[in-house]
Image (cartoon, rainbow, N blue to C red):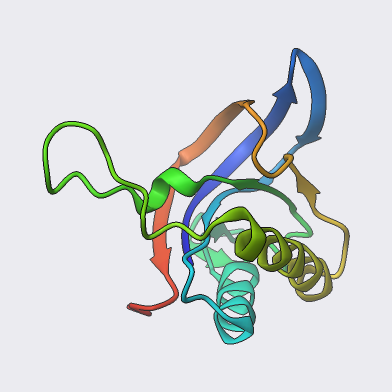
Length: 150
């Protein structure tokens, strides 16, 4: 799994011009699922996301997690994070899992993030054409790949 995590003041997603989800202070997470991903990737990644200390403490130091500040999470599926641009100018998405594999894993990520965060998360709709808006706070943007685990 690959994620782009953005610390936000607010974020929202709309589908077909209709609001799907809105959050205030928290994390906007763009998630790509590979066909080799498993429950182990979900467990590790969810724990990393909710405990990642990228929010300021009272001294202005990034020392708090989204869990500690009781922030919100907006999760958006985005298969294009596995784009390969090695050949030509048209990206290849062969590393991204097909929907029959990705959808059940995406749903498991939602459940696990909800459990680990201790409150429901907001989501887009898997496979939909979505319009995502955000105010990146900082800006703070972090990339994590569950297979690399840097």
